[in-house]
Length: 348
Image (tube, rainbow, N blue to C red):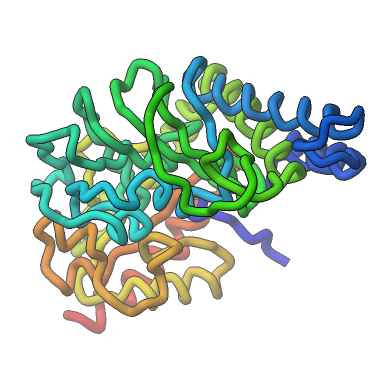
């Protein structure tokens, strides 16, 4: 049986061995991190070790790290009650709390006239396009850049950012809000005094331990140049599709992008159809953000960039990871181009 190939890392990354081992070890820690006895102190030490690991990976030493159930909750914690402007290319978790007032150009770049009243992602999950974050920005979705791009929260010049563990090979269901020390926010989940009073509820110690281990491993990968190799494989795939598929648009090809992301739009060929065809062929890809995929609508990101509905509806995202091999993308290109030729013949 042919081995399936996973090419949807921007939706979620496979669990790292380091994260799994840390979670298994944390299962044997009995205490509540808020308890003052020895068992509680042991749990607290594990919690704070993970917090330090995440802070170090983010270049956020001295900043405040608040653990949450994921990036969506962290976004709500950062954005609720702020009345910030955003852009239509933002993740739905951000658009739920902001407007779409910021202009997007044809290369997916966003203009931010008033950074202190705005939110802007560091990189887009669908196109991979990287933004230049302005000094004084209120909030940034750092989720897709975390572990793939060399940045430090401390020198980004932003007030708050947020990330998710499962995008870097940690467990699902845990994330973090990163705040410049002294930043004032209103707790959305109230009760106990956990997480410095910002987020009540006993911390998910097992998941947080996995998050910390994944963050440390992801930082090492980045420092070791792993994502440079991923970028080379992505470029091989991109060049192959570009040479053989004349009806296809490679979105963001001329822009600075995440090293692993390729957005391919073929007007008239539904992205959902392509996803199903590739799934049957043994490849996992997506038709946009995993949180909005399946809603049978044109990509809001591509529409904001000026693409028409037919093109925006015909987009797929291929996102690679450290385990992706050159042979994987060559096999994918062969399978995708086979279906593309059938589509082109019908459309002729």
